[in-house]
Image (cartoon, rainbow, N blue to C red; front, side, top):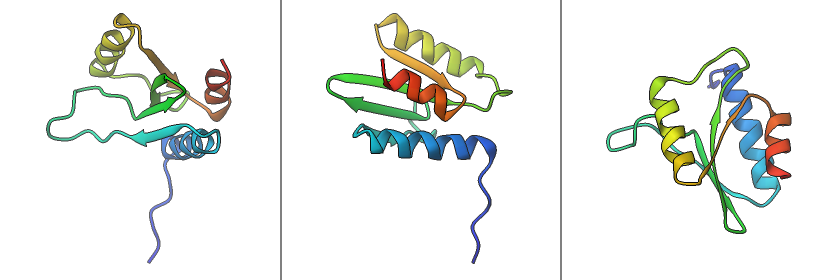
Length: 96
């Protein structure tokens, strides 16, 4: 049985997850569902006291209004929220 081919966004998600795991981050996907905060990021990653909220998008896709509100909530509390459109962007963010 074959699994479905990954979407362009799915490819970015997989690359981000594998890269962050390779760099020893504790990273986990957050699935939208009953009880989840609307607009929550695709991933949360933690390492050495740093917590990243990571939303993955293709270069053409945009955040929903719920995602923008979630980003505002995180950043207003001093959190780090990133929209990542490629593995190269994730590498730049992680190395800071």
